[in-house]
Amino acid sequence: MGRKGFIGLRLSGSKALVKKLRRAGKRGTTALGAGLYAVGNEIMSDAKRRSPVDMGVMRASGYVTLPQGRSDLVVEVGFGGAAKDYVVVQHEDTSLNHPVGESKFLEKALRDKAGSPAFGHAAKAAFESGRKPGHGVHPTKPGE
Image (cartoon, rainbow, N blue to C red; front, side):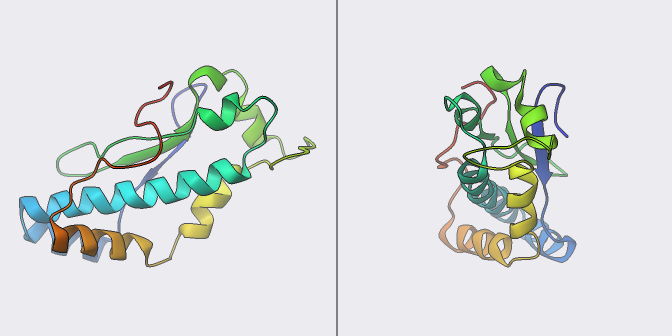
């Protein structure tokens, strides 16, 4: 769970891949961040497709932070901002009937991506191209 009034998840890569990228120095760390950020954006796109919609405020509140940290890179994927008063209830209350979308929308999007090779592919592509994180399709901060 993210901050109070927000629903969020933190992503990290496999220990073996992270170790290998860290040995590559700054370029590897940049690729690690770019991989996390790319997968975070994929998860958010899926979560937004699954989220309940009334007027669209909650769906629009989805964000993916740029990689943060030095020794442990973290990307946060979450909902909140203008929707913070009801996003947790909409996500957690499985008894609600949603004409559009479903409960556990972020959790399900993350679970579907868990164990996939997406992170490794994204990190490898970023390493090979020298791409840096920061070209996502979602806001990078809650409430943007």
